Length: 142
Image 1 (cartoon, rainbow, N blue to C red):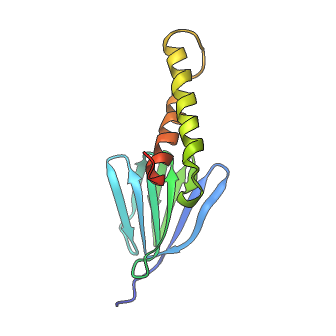
Image 2 (cartoon, rainbow, N blue to C red):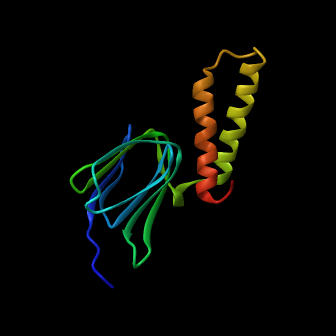
């Protein structure tokens, strides 16, 4: 097996780094579809949607770290990829029951907003719904 080149990867949330290290490949959920990156990728700037971000530390050994990530921005430059996202939950730490509860609570609150019974922020509720749905998808429960 040929030695694959590695590059620096940073997956950063407002709370701090969710992943910092080297990878052989990175796949992020671009707004228009998945974006795959290998070492020596052309410079790139893109928007990200909620989805699964996969960091392949070793493709041959199938060492992959997967995260349920929120929307954000992505940049590749000089063998460095940076994803700035509003949230990143390691797939192994997702609690499907908790995510399902969060989804149901946000959906119920959104229904109250639509009925004029609540003045909660619609956009925030929609983001909470997307975040919970994304965690369920990544965890295999949705």
